[in-house]
Image (cartoon, rainbow, N blue to C red; front, side, top):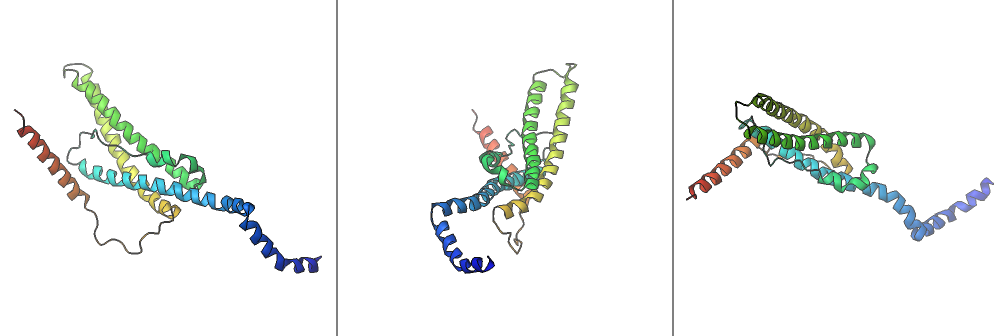
Length: 208
């Protein structure tokens, strides 16, 4: 029997090549390539989200010192990558997926904080300071700001931990050398605020 199998071995390679060259081979290759392709697709989509969101969080972490008692109404974490990758998320490593679920819950929680703050602020603006409910609403605003800022710090840390794993999953190699210039977020925040103040002054000067 062993001699028989030995005699067949040279021909098995030809048979395997013929199978892989035909329709059956396409199906086999698809079964092998599809999970890998889907993992890269999911990682790439999520990578774009996490990079964008981490950058915005770092900007807000610096900007909050300029106005510590408010939450910007236009603050918005992106979850487009998660929604776009929904069909292929199951192909990701389970531990990575678990970390991503936590991270995206933080993103959604931050977006919810913006909504809660806006609702409480409208309620406060609609009532006189003599209203007995005023201190409660004020306290609600302060708590919302505090948990928002705490969530920002935690979410930045989580995003930084996940980014290298997403880079690897997307097939993107990290540069061997670090960039010589490090982005100065405080300078960028100062520039953006100065530009906004300039536009507001221009609008005020254009009034009749």
